Image (cartoon, rainbow, N blue to C red; front, side, top):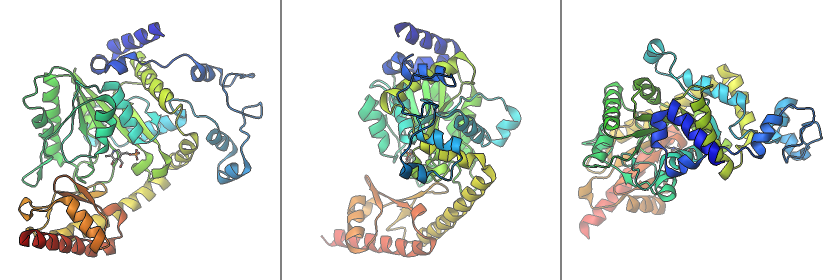
Length: 445
Ligand SMILES: Cc1ncc(COP(=O)(O)O)c(C=O)c1O
């Protein structure tokens, strides 16, 4: 095993030196062990396969309970069988191939024309994007490696990175004077002298902001990330959970591809994406982790070996049933894409309704931040009101039959993705009324 780990690290140092240099102590220790799943994979298709501990009819077919098989009765025999048995640790090969094609079909058009051969790995299947983020945290995070993410950010990053690996969060405001700040990552690192690797998290469309940088901001962000990498090794983790849900002219393609194209010797782009939102499959728990290395290379197999070691150690293997159901959608792309486009239109209608309703509110009470994408909109409460977002949330729950999310210190997040378009004006009316009531009470006390 020590040899295997050394060989894996050597393959990475040779083929993906920037990535090798950013590995955490845990990341360096990882290699997929040549034990049961490894040996079972080698025996797949043999006449006598007595490797893996899954119960079959003796010829590779599952022996399911009728209620469970009945739930999958719409599937072809071969798919039903795959859904009922273990998936490979790295995920079902056809799903990985099809998801890679899905990702690459969404590269920025200008890059496709200029550099169609950009390297991207076969995406490794994980149990939802959260699991993918935790894997990236394990590979690169540690207490001397900051996670750089503008605030407000999705709070679970603290659990996946800081709580689990010790990576401290370095942050700067995502919005300055009501506008998105593409230099926020650089500002968060200002004054940092450390030469250790850092992990910059780029989440667009963002949660909780619902923002995707416009073309000019995107160029500034890209240049800024490259400047950071000039100074220290940098992993850029693209959390593309809400990919595709862009409602204005902002470029919808993941910045992952621009980072790959930049070929910076110290910058390591990593993409985490998946079916949760992109394919509207929240309960399926299918995510993917993708690196900028080409399939068929020793470095590709080495990083895959490390990720598989983590998957095997924590969840064993990803959920086969979900993978097979997702495959059905990817095999019929025209239908899936038409349905996704229809849902995007539905959300665009809610987004327009929310933008209009918030636009008509009193700026002395509510300051909507820029929002052009995703599932959420963020509103800042003016400091001079003297009230907290949590007070607003509690007040709306108790007196106005409204649930929203409060984010410290003075932001409220509205999930317009789950409110009917026709209900949005009334939701905003109650929010404004609640804030007005609380502000008046704060003034008179
Ligand atoms: C920004 C962001 N990243 C990742 C996730 C996690 O996705 P999943 O539900 O697939 O774990 C979410 C879910 O809300 C999210 O908002």
